[in-house]
Amino acid sequence: MSFRKILASLTIAAGAALLSPSHASAAPYTWNVLGGGTQAWNNAANWDPNTGTPSTTADTANLQGALASSLSLDLADGVAAAGTTTVGAIWFGGSSGAVTTDITGTSALVLNNATANASVISGGVAGSVNRISAPLILGKSTDVSG
Image (cartoon, rainbow, N blue to C red):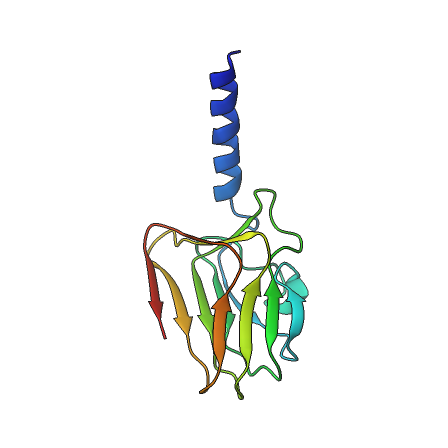
């Protein structure tokens, strides 16, 4: 087999792995570790429901809880084989006090919605900071509001 054919096969396989969901059904996931600190995105116990983590184009990551202190949410811990985490929407804010919510890590966050525009909603009380400092890849269309 030629080098081009091998490269094309690997590219197709990598693309399929990137697009395939890591769990069976899409869901809204709500962050449930309200104490803040440095936490792992890919720990199902940190989300409600705790049956998985936001990782498909139809999933919503809701970070609008009443955080007691700043939250650093690390994508690097246990990411998919493709080295990315994909979600259709992220909602920041809603905290009872001014805190920083930061999605961090060396793995990329992909915002891409399968059926509509991907969205980022930034809210919270005055003085709150909502940030994505991990590498960010935007899908076809992304709405940002806040």
